[in-house]
Structure formats: structure tokens, C-alpha cells
Length: 340
Ligand code: NDP
Image (cartoon, rainbow, N blue to C red; front, side, top):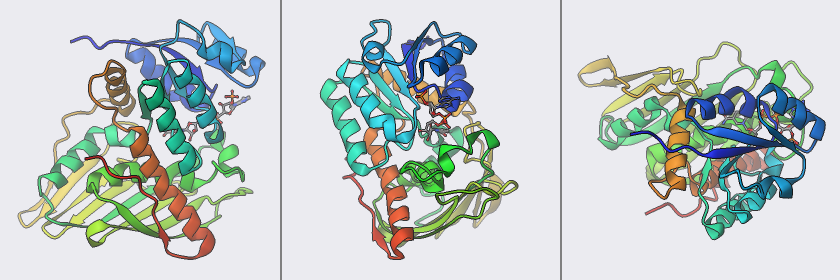
């Protein structure tokens, strides 16, 4: 059956919109009608090279357009709340970049604004959409590894040169923890399906640049049922493979090269009968899957892959890591209530 399509506006003339979301929107048959920037000249240049007809710097003029059904928010993290509120108030569905906001209070306010306006809200944590991650969740839920005991995430890469701007600054949305650890949490939270309880973390600055926020973090998070989760998030490691491991009392899963938007990577299950690669039937791009679920949700069918509440709980892991690293203490994770 042919997927419905939406008419989009971009809130934020960003790299991610240009390099990943615009191609995905166009692959899916969606149309993009306008781009909003705080700088009109930037918006115009961006619109021209990306074949977008309208460039605006006025948020009210943008959200009141009748030719926009949904907005994609990919401005810097501190602006997500203001833009989501304006879009929701104007009746536009909201696909927001991660981290959904820079504080848990802001994250809750985005969910409330969208719920109150009865518009769909999804957050573009793309990893849970991946065929690899969905297969791993199925295996764990089916008992393939027995009782989960530990999870190990390696999300260490080298920050591309073009992205070495605000991420290395000292604004509240900067740093590897806000950028990467919430992605890890968006994978681990639904994988375990339980509450995160406490976090202990150390962050450092080790890159070949003048960073004013952490560029590496190692964190241990304790989830319910005495499950321990280790997260290594880094902007400084050019050759480290990304991976997700899930260890249980009856088996282990090791999935390599799966912490990326491309639908790559392998999933290997080891148990009493030996090791074998698990087939991953769905190799569609994570953005295509995310957009498909979001588009259905705008029509009232199904739920987005990552809801506002899911993104709140992903952010709760990042904020607990930062607090632990700053205080040197074990910190309680401020999870929202889990869905029934
Ligand atoms: P960018 O730095 O490319 O863009 C962020 C903002 O910076 C833009 O919205 C724009 O502001 C301003 N800006 C960028 N370039 C220029 C320029 N040449 N001149 C003037 N202003 C400029 O950020 P990213 O694309 O890296 O990240 C944007 C959001 O997307 C963040 O929330 C980030 O966390 C998220 N993201 C998510 C990823 C994922 O894996 N899901 C991956 C990468 C990013 P204005 O809006 O005012 O034009």
C-alpha cells in the first residue's frame, strides 16, 4: 500500500536536515516547502542549494503557513522547546531532533504542548528504528539470552570536522553526553523495558581541540533487576567500532557497527549451542522507518518509534551522567513513568 505523504517545513537550517533528513523526506515522496533560520541570508542560501521554495526568519510567519503539515526541528538543542511550542500551537505535527531538549522540564513541556494541541510528536532517535536493533529486542524479549544481566554500548567515533562547532562549546546542549549518550539510552531503555535507577560516570576532555565541554564519557547505569549497563560515548576515537552487547544468563548478543544511521552491522548470538549470525530481514534506512511511523502517527495510526516520553527517558540518562560526572556521586535517574 502506498504510504501517505506530508508537506514539511524545516525549523533550523542545519547540517543534519541537509545531509540526512531532506534526502529521506524526498525518498519517501514528502515535499519540503519552507526553511526557518535565525539568519535570513543563511536561510536563503540554504533554500537555494536544497531546492526549497521559501526561506523565512520569522517563526510566526513560518508556523502559520497553510502549506505545511509537519515540521522537522533540527536547530540547536536550546531552541527545540520554543520551536516545538510554536509549531504545536499552530497545529503542525512535530518531528524533533534529539536530545529532545536540554532539561527534563523542557522535554516534558514539549510533550505537553503537542498533546494539548493534539498533534503528533516524534523524536529522531533513529537507532531504535534499525532492523538490527528491532531484531535484538525481539531476541531478548523471546528469551534468547535468558535473564539479561549486562549491556555494553560502544558509541565512540571521531567527530567530523564540520560538526566541531557548538558541540565542543559550553552551552547546555553541547558535549558528547547530550549528543551520544541519549542515543544509547534510546536503544537500551526499550531493550530492557525496565527503569534506570542510578548512574555513575566520569567525563573527560581528550580530543585534539579546545573543547569547553566533555568529549568523552564512560558511564555505568543500574537498571531494575540488578542489570548493569556500560556506555562509552566519545568524539575522539577514529577507529573504534561501534557495538552493542547484551549478556544474559543463557546467552549473549554482540552486534557490531550498529550505532549508526545506516542500516549496516551484524548481530551474533552465542549460547549453549555455539555462535551464529542472526538474519536481519529489514535493512531499510533508519530515517525511512522513522518517517514512515511518524507519518502514520499523524493520521492517528500507530505510535512513532520514539515518542516524547521515550525521548524524555533517554534525556534522563544524559542528565544523570552529567550530574554524576560533575558531583562525583552516584545519581538517581529521573525516569518518567513507563508506559503500560
Ligand atoms: P548545525 O550546527 O548544522 O545546525 C544547527 C543550527 O546552527 C542551525 O539550525 C542554524 O541555525 C545554525 N547554523 C548552522 N550552520 C550555519 C551557518 N552556516 N550560518 C548560520 N547559522 C548556521 O547542527 P547539526 O545539524 O549538527 O544538529 C542540529 C540538531 O540535530 C541538534 O539537535 C543535534 O543534536 C541533532 N542531530 C541529530 C543527529 C541524529 O543522529 N539524530 C545527528 C546530528 C545532529 P538557524 O536555525 O538559526 O538557521
